Image (tube, helix red, strand yellow):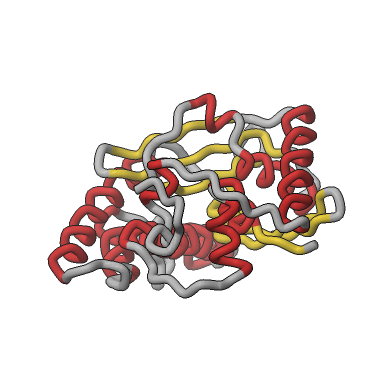
Length: 262
């Protein structure tokens, strides 16, 4: 069986939402929170790409005789807060908002989010290995595909950072999060290096909050069991709904589901 992590995540949220989206393939509109999250991810991808380009430019330029001065390469673009805001405005997606006013408010809100990200980013020297890198790995015969938002090389080893525009999760939920366990498994398979640290970077109007965690072999074994259990339930057609106010409120199919808790 081949499945994406986003599909597993949807099934874990509510099996009926999975059925509507991936089995029955019911059409749906992108929501305002999804649109905002995509805008943030697109912006930070461009920012990370520019980080990596800048490092390559400097490495190549250091071999040039004319760069024994303090000048930067001619096409080097400084990574500043203003440049990040430019990326934000060029990446902003208007689809998903009910009105132009709502979209304009989200655009302004995003400016503050980008400032918070920049303050977090400049706290330390960073070495980025990859941005928005896709991966595929096999767990218990199930092929799982996904994508890393950002991986940095630190003194301790690899650090996986995933951007979130949702509410901050408490430490205990981050410690048990299946998505981060899948990232740790993928790191070991793709880079043949252990993942020293994993984090969710929550980006909101109140700031940039990073919640870090690690995974032991025991955690990864438990994650493999969770994935196997979900895969078996999907294969058997078990799409029994698990409604709750929090889940149903953001479900794109709440208008057609007969047990929606909203």
